[in-house]
Image (tube, rainbow, N blue to C red; front, top):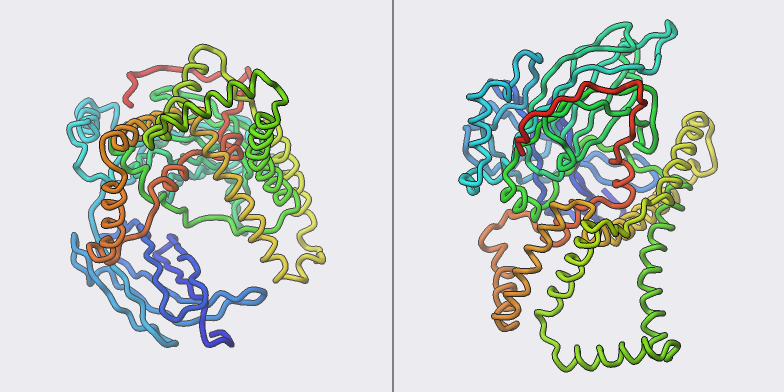
Length: 515
């Protein structure tokens, strides 16, 4: 499709309202994506997946390459099918692996019909995720039940001074809706949603919208709740936040959430690629976002620069006592160094921070810099919304905008990488820090007892034979997959629970902790 005789292809999939988009493979006519997408099929008779292939073009509309379809009703269940589909209206074909398999239901019910209230169902769920069933269906990590009870004090979105609110509950790519309560700022839904948990590090998103028959729904508020932060069986009032989750908006929503999961399965799933959301907002250029990412990256780099200055000051004998201690430590470490000491030092650092936290000497500081930048970004977003009809200079040079967006995203990725490492050692998510301790203990023991050449040999054999053993395996890096579950500083701020107004004090009731 391009003048160089090549293309930059990507593929779009659609099944009903479920949509996915593959990554872009630059400058190739024979791309290999090796990506996996999960669709939910609710109809017994099957469905049609529409597939289109496109060529990415910077600065202009993408070129259409071809299309094809998959009729799911023609495929047998519980079997993987290798399909080679010829592209219509174009050249070439797509190779896909398609599997239809049964899964536990993602359901909506009334408050009176409650899985965990029924002793038999509750016992069955607890048994399904007990430690005795570690290796049974590793993808089924846990069970989530969300009671959406009511909301109070919502924003008036209609000219009548009322709203027609409904609620959307999302967990990764599972998306369920309540009914609409018309002309009400204090709606009661009393609905129970159940989900299967595939990744315990997922974030539950609950969004309230105002229904408009003539146009798209108006946003009223949103909350994002990491599954690992949920307190089982407690009815809580969550303050609704704005779209960017950076500050409060009007109203609170009352939720009661229960999470049951198998900790061993959850730990194993941490080391595989994270599921990507198919409903993601398109990246856009933002001066404030670019500045924020630059400052975040600068802070990460300054940690390394300050460490280098500190080491250099030891060499320069700025402080004789410190330099003497560093010199003795250097001689001792170099003379006695063994490879197993590297994970052991990281293990000691994690342990030291843990004891600081439990002893009340927590040295973690609230990141007010990131919060301030997020608030500034929110103000800029509001300003952009008001001026969206004005054509600025940046819209006229679309190609440059794409380059700037790429730089903006790279800065975000690098800064997030550094922040995630810091937050692992800071015990921001205790579950992940404990998992790191177990892994570092294992690495220390392995490096102590097994010669390095054998470890490298096993690693190399595994890497070279992986493609031969599983030709369609999705490549991954366990360390990067682990770090992808650790929140960056921006996400930590977004997931913080805001304190509700004292007038909105929910009736709390505790049940047995099912986690």
